[in-house]
Length: 324
Picture 1 (cartoon, one colour):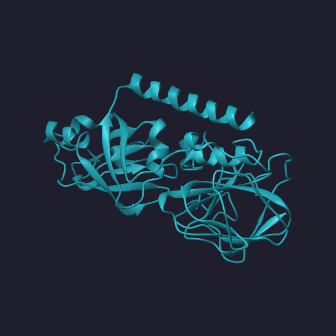
Picture 2 (spheres, rainbow, N blue to C red; picture 1 turned 90 degrees about the horizontal axis):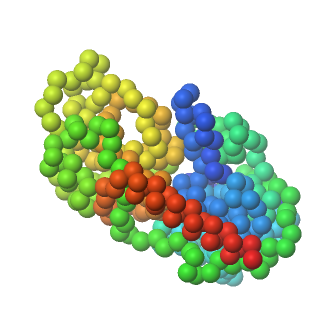
């Protein structure tokens, strides 16, 4: 059982829920940027949420299946066709030997997830099948899919050909978002006005947005409090002596464009982390398209934990709906 890739799409990679536990040696957690859409795709075809899917960016691969299987497509909205006929997203779709699957361009959101019964059967590396392209590990040969690739599928699970997720449980992807953040350890380096701007102004996502990080553009540059730079930090006021980077941390290199680090970001460096996006909003961030706008709303640790609890409760509701 396999997929024969004709056209790979813009950036299609095999992803699961990542390989946590190796950040101390410089290997980021990786995995699906939108973990909720990834998990729903798996549940629709009868897989555990941990199974590997194909994450696509803006466009998805065109491929032929070599044996009968079941597919679900979630995440960013795009046209999905089997042998030229449209099929729905957020629904388990049976595929037969020789079927050709093709896709349009994303019209809402940016990342789409393709799950197949049995999962994507690539080797496990450091506990994960996720592709970490910068390190050339995981996935299919440690890289994005290419034309001519054969993507192996796992053993099919039965009884999942009619599942669909109710419309009211499906995530919504907009071009404006409020992204909640916890103010960071180095926020004191900003002037009061600049910190207020970070947590109230509207920022536009630039085309420089990938699995490593999302760069935003604001109307005005940030200013830093005057200080004597510590030895080894360099002259840029946004520089610090090297420190660890949490996933979701926001940096201001040069004081111009906020960069939010995502799941493939490096584990440490020399830029001040002025805030960190809360875990409950990382999926929202993952689905923003260039030109979208975001407001970074400051919340407390307690509010962040409450948001995480709410997100977990919604996942539980979806799991129950798809297992009923």
